[in-house]
Length: 287
Image (tube, rainbow, N blue to C red; front, side, top):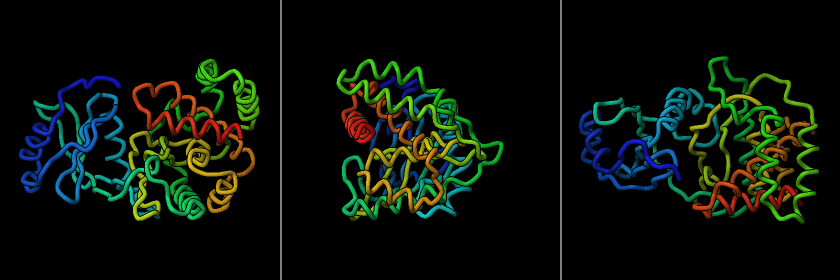
């Protein structure tokens, strides 16, 4: 995990709240997660504070602040649109957010009770999200792009998998990469949709979180989540509810599942949760 580029702490969160949102400053603050990109603190019963710990992450928080309030109203699941925006200060160089707290556990740790229903729920969510994006929408150089742009990373990642799986995985990759590229308008994408960014509460998918990689482009990138959570039959239910994934898009989404599974497997030496997501997706792609 990369080191923080500025010191972040509960004490810093308290100082920033006191200066900029004093009506929230008396609420209890405790660390919920200190991740690659953000320090996330619970703020009372209703809120979280997301404080970027790297300049790259600060750009992603800015994307959430700009676009999630606009998108949230038309999505069938809750998303963490900021309720307050914090400004840079002499103590801290970037914007930061106060967002709603959603109850539940991530799907990577607590699967939905009914995976068929969950597949339909996620398909409906993606169907609503994947609308044409405006020209000023964020562009991510690694997500939503033609699969050819990920070829180098895939070939490097395959060098580290079991030789018994490598031939089959390479065949799947070549078939997906040969599929016609997305030729529709760039669509809104979550950009980083996997089971650690999906919340489950009382056995049902309850929210989708962490939109820092929000971007526009090929919807196949997001549809790859189908291989991270579901069986083949359940994936078909997601596709049916989604309603507009033609065969080429579905084949590319399988290619994206392979791309992302290799990323998770290659870069999760200190993160067994993400490695587990990668292993499950890799097996689902091969099977």
